[in-house]
Structure formats: structure tokens, C-alpha cells
Length: 561
Image (tube, rainbow, N blue to C red; front, side, top):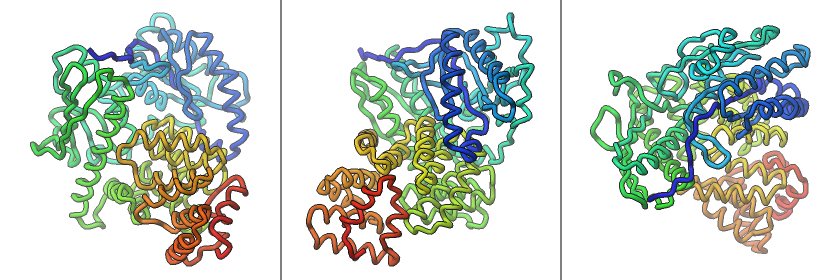
């Protein structure tokens, strides 16, 4: 029988988030980071500990905490908000939103997973600034004692949560922070839900109890990893609506064996009988969470590739002028998945113009603009990328790719500490996204933390069965700065369509190896792709913190440049 180290427990999960974090960072990064650290150490952490809770995850400016009782979590939240309302003048106050949910959660070591955690984060977004939003299960636990202080908020539809959730609101009597910024839950959705990709996870019944336990972990991981793609709706809709969306898919999974296990997966259109793909996955007898997450990540990668492929083919049959914002976005994502980001840029731009509230389109447009700056060195593109990234963060400060885009922009501008802050939050919001982690590895290399950068990119390779080709470029540039030119050459040669940047790095690696003929060949190819190649362009587009690292790159390339 399989040994499953992951346990379940009933717990109250509390999520906190700083209101207007992106705006505050834009105004004064260093001061804001210092104030947030002080907020965590002086107010949030002590109150959590005093009320029997424990922080299990830090997400940039936010926290996730677990409590044994709903009452303890609520008392903690009320104490935090009350203290903040009284300790600082309105003009200087950091304002929090707090959400609490009571649910059965998965426990893996010191971490927590599952819908119960996701719901807490979602209801936090619906809290008024300076206030608290709780789910009905929490309210029933505290109703007899302090329930009169809460106002019913009705049933809410939460992103990627199948069932509606009834919520209750509370604010300190002395707080008037609700005037500062409206609840994000009140913001209207501008994209048509019926147009979005919907992916359902269908579980075939398992007769054996230990199979059901493994299947529960697989299902939770699949739903979590799919939810990290904000442009996909995950879950279920009423049977009457089956097939009502043009992009409605089902992942059907079944489990066999008593350990080791055979996981059979089929991917199909929900309203059709044809199977888009089908394949088995073998799981070991000691099926731990890492093995399950590996299989789930590979399944989601296959799902995303097929969704983008089939959706873009359907979109391409229509006149481009008739495409909606979401269709432009999907087509751009398809091009990006094929490593054609420069071509995708105009589709992301068009999507933002058609729907100014489509967060994913703004984030991808900013990423494409940043990539354009890295390849062209045109400062106007960087300024535009910064503007678009700000819009994405204003739309949703808890959107992983908005922080990813902001991180790329800040790195391009050599604001390394700010870039690190955004990368950390993006990684915490989407911990299974290896592309975010690979780019974070490149940042670590630019600031000189080569050991951590190497460890991060190796982890990305380990968890990606089919890694994107640019992963080799990231590992190559790290190895080049580590003084391992032979290994760097091997990595750069794995990149099939080499940009001028890759050729410059390859030339530098050959120079370190003492192979001047190969160095010259790469230099000629680089110049053919970028006629404006110069030391200044290299300095502008390789944002090293340490001038010695940049000098190493330029010196290795040769004096001709």
C-alpha cells in the first residue's frame, strides 16, 4: 500500500494583503519595503502568535496563516486592523485587507494546500480596505459572541471556485479606510466568462480507499496548477451549460493499481466524443507530493499546449478585424508558446485596446515590450513597458504575471531590489510556473548570486520534462559567469534560433575557451542580426549590477566590438 505523507486537517486560513502596494512601491520602493517589513514584524506576526496561529507562507506584501480555531483567526484579524487604525495617522497608514476561510486543507510539512487556502485568498480580495471578509463557515463559529458586528455580503462567485461562497464583512468602528480604495470584489468583470477557456477535471471512480486518497491529491494539484493560468477557468458549470462555451474541455483521469500506480489521462472537448490526446503516467508506490506534482505539471503543460493550438486554429478561421480581446490574447499566447514573442506583441496590444481590464493581456504586452527592449535597446519600448506593467498591477496586485512583467521592467531599468521583490511575489503566487523561476534565476545571476542562480535553473530543468529552449540560454549565461565556458557553449548550442544576444554570449564563451576562430564566427553572425551591435548596446541590454561581470562579458567578446 502506498505511503502518503500528506495529511488533511480542518483549519482556519487567514490571508492578508496591503492595499495599493504597487502604487506605494512606485512612489518610494525602499521606504515601502521597510514599512511592510515593520508591519509584519511589529503587528501581524505578534498578533498571529498571540492568537494561536502560524504564518506558513509570505507572498510579497501578503501573508497566509493557519489557526486551529476560527475564533482565534477572527480575533487576530480584528486585533490587527484595530491596531493599524489607531497607531498611525491616515496619511501614513499601511492599510490591509484580510480574508478568513474555514475548510479541510492538505498539509505537507509546514505548508498548506487546497481549495480552502484558495478561497481565503479570494475572499480577502473582496474585503474593504481596513476590513475583514469571512466565509459563512467562519461566521457560524463566531456568530453567538461577535456575529452582530458583521454585515452579510451575500453569495459571491470566486475565480476558479466552483460553488458560490456566502461572505460576511467587518470593519473597525473607528476606521474610515473604506474611502481610500474600493473593494476589488466590486470591480466589474469586463471579459465575457462564456468566451473564456473552461477546463473541467473529471475523476473516474476509484473503488479502493488508498486510490481515492491519491486521486484527491492529483485532482487538487491539477486544479491548482491550472488556476495558476489566470486566463483559464477551472472547475465545473451546471450540466445545462455543457458545451455552451466554444472552448470547453475536460481532463478525465483514472487510477489503477495498489502501488505503484498507473494514472490514465484523457483530454477532450466536453461536448464531443473525440479525444484530443490520451496518455498514461506511472507513479511510484511511495507516491509522495513531489511525484504527484510532477505528473500534474506535465499534464497541465500538455493541456495548455493543446488548448492554445486548437483555439488559435479556430480563431484564425475568422477575419482578424473581428477578433475579440480574449481571442487576440489567446492567439498571442499561442505565438509566445512557439517562441515567437515579437510577433505576439501586436496581438497583446490589440487585446488591451479592446478590453482595458483584461489583466493577462496587459501583463503579456508588458513582457513582450520588455523583451523588445532587451533585443533592440530602444529606451522608448522600456518606458512603454513600465506604463503597461503599472496598469496590470493596478488591475490586480495579486496576479502572478503582472508581477512577472513588473520584475522584467525593473530589471531592465537596473532596479534590482525592486525586480527581486516582484519576482518573489510572482513566484509565490504561481509556485509551479517554471518560466517565472527560470527568469528569476537570470536575475540572481545579474546581481552576482551565481550559486543560487545555478540551483534555481537546475530545479527548473528537473521539474520540466520538456523545458523551453530559452532555459538553456539562462543556464548558459550563468555558467559563463561561473567561469565554465565549455558547459556554457553546450547550453548555447542547444538554442536552435539564436538571437544576437545568444551569439554574443556564445562568442564570449568561445573566447574564454581560447577558440578565436569560433569567437569571430559568432561575432559575424551577431552583427548580421544586429547591425548596431556595440559595447554601449551590450551594456544597455545586459543589466549587471557588477561592472566586473559586464567587463568580463565585453572583454571575452573581444575588442572589435
